[in-house]
Length: 520
Image (cartoon, rainbow, N blue to C red; front, side):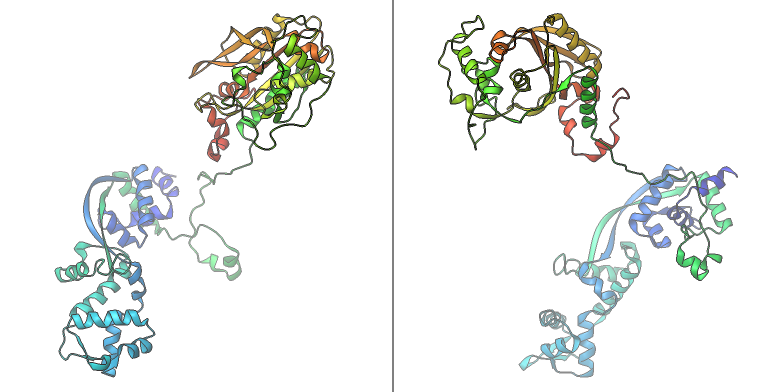
């Protein structure tokens, strides 16, 4: 098979029909192609773009010209004559009819018939006598009406015509009826368009020659139907060559959101490391969200600008005992922890206020209060909520991977080792570092940072060893290391995205095409 034959094999029927219009005129305007090929403007536009990309046609220039089409109001006149002409035909048979009689005989709206009668009177074609009877004026000039009807029929056949397709008198009639009665009721619509001029390339001439030799029309059948098999018409039909290399329709299959895949990956990793999963409510009391973590009730982070408080109900009914009493005592005077506490009167009503969980650590302290295993390892993937300005690394709701490890021999070095493991294995960052930090419920405390490939260093989260004021009220006497890391930011590195909002994109194309790293 020659190169030219191969090119023809890959041509679309619209391309073949478009190329055939160049057999007598190797250089043509797009408007001429529309007329010669009897194709729509959109079909020709697509075909010309395809042929130019295949270098069978080349663009050589353009002109701006005025084009005429029928309006919605004149579309029906392709089959019916103008109302004014039909009225005159009725009057020729029975002169002296009223407007209402004409409307009834023609089956037209009386209002429209009144307008048509007024137009005929203005053009001095009819007279309206007393009693509303209409009579035709002898020898009246109706040439403009005739030309108007002929123009409608001509444009209806072509679909669209250039200004050069009309003589001076015809163009004068078009201008006189262009939006004459408003955009919707005008007979003709005149628009200015860019008309591109294209010519065949050398390869395009060779392809066209072979198309003509093979007698290809672009009308070849591309599908064998049951009806054709039944009536036997397939025997004489001309079929389009089957191209097994043609692009096939895109198959869209079901797929998890990439971030959902990442969250599942994190869960599998933690379970593989021997951790047990913790679960808890999204709505927490201030007791579990803050007080049980030894966060003083006067701490600025508890203000309304950092946490979301519920309108209804505003408070929970009870708090679990004896944990409630031990925590209240620890805040007031330190209890049996060896601390002096915060030295203020613990507000027993405020601790019952309900908030949206602002930190995953609330799940960790709940686990401490419910007889955890010692030694033991626990984790949670917790949805948290805080009032925050939205930008590329902040959102008002986010996921944390929360965890604690309890044991006699647990120390700060174990914590640093785990944090490094999470950064490298889960976030899959290449660089990470530690920085000293402060939290009311851990001592010592550390912040972990990772290097994002585009955003630079970003905070990943905080960690530390729970203070005795957190563990002792719940009967835990062994060291407990704890951490809360931002899963959204970890996913930004693992999924190679630059904006945290992309994790929750509603763009299905992003979900379908986003590639997740093979290690996930």
